[in-house]
Image 1 (cartoon, rainbow, N blue to C red):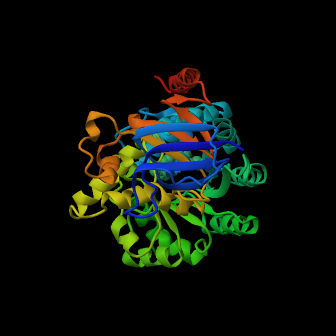
Image 2 (cartoon, helix red, strand yellow; image 1 turned 90 degrees about the vertical axis):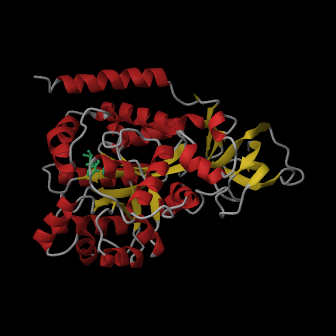
Image 3 (cartoon, rainbow, N blue to C red; image 1 turned 60 degrees about the horizontal axis):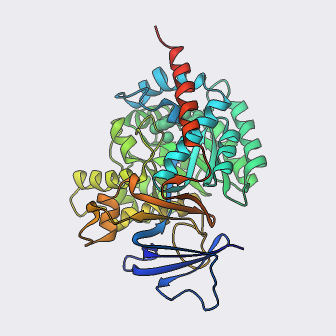
Length: 433
Ligand SMILES: CSC[C@H]1O[C@@H](n2cnc3c(O)ncnc32)[C@H](O)[C@@H]1O
Ligand SMILES: [Zn+2]
């Protein structure tokens, strides 16, 4: 079993007062053995590798709780539109022309960008998720995969079958680095009957559900017209809540909706930049947290963002709430929790999101020896308001280094960029007049 010792500043995310300015973290195999001040590694721990990074901050890898990785293929292809015209006029026609290999390469590009910006885990929703799984397995990151199912589409049934195959073939793959959830797309694209069928099958197989919920006022009005209640109340009455559910967005909620999410332990994936870009609105994040809802952070896809950088997302999450409410809303440490430990809980993990003995060794180091990090008054504030993707130096997932000195150790980035450029442009050319 490999043994690694990292000496650095450590922000373990185990509590707001926990920080080791001169710390060390001992890793054995895929797990953390000890975290503490200099000299705290157990006596007799003889590392095969020591990483001395006194000016780096080590923290848990960031967790993206809602994305569509392969949508890097559509980055800056469809901008400045509200949700429904964006989907129906631009995104869905483009996606209809994407094949399995386009999805594979688009996902590889997303993973490269995520690693370079500190993200070790994602919850993804898309088609051809077997190839997404392959990309994740090769790359070495962690992911929860859901087959996006538009129940009302002609291929809704086929998508459901592919979802079942995804559970059978990928749930637990890569020594548990891959997990699977069911991915019914949204209340406005799936019937109540379809959603109940999904819930029954997900329960039968012991996996959760990942779904877009209450993203826009349009959605609220549509569901209220059709069902006479809000999307959250409708999903609750259908019996969809109660097990492991991640609801992406939850922008437009009544007080009763928030109570339901809290009572049924529905986790929320908050996507502030996508919500701003599509003019969907501002989610009531402090209100949800105050009621005990687990809220993680997501980027959504690279077409509604247009990047997958969770450092930018943390800053946006904090600033958006301050603009909407007041400057005390969503302080830095709380935002960091959303991107780490709360994100882990949302995805159903009990052993990632913190640096603590027995936890998986999923971590990043951030180079703090740069002008924008001085003076060092507050490490959490620096990470949320100052740091950017380019500051991430090192990444370890499951005890294995996958990036060092910003060099990706498991992927050929140049090849990936070339593949995506050619594939995306080829599809876009089919729409040219
Ligand atoms: C059927 S696979 C997933 C599906 O979701 C689409 N999508 C991407 N972003 C959003 C969003 O913010 N709201 C709703 N749907 C979204 C994506 O393009 C895929 O078609
Ligand atoms: Zn989405």
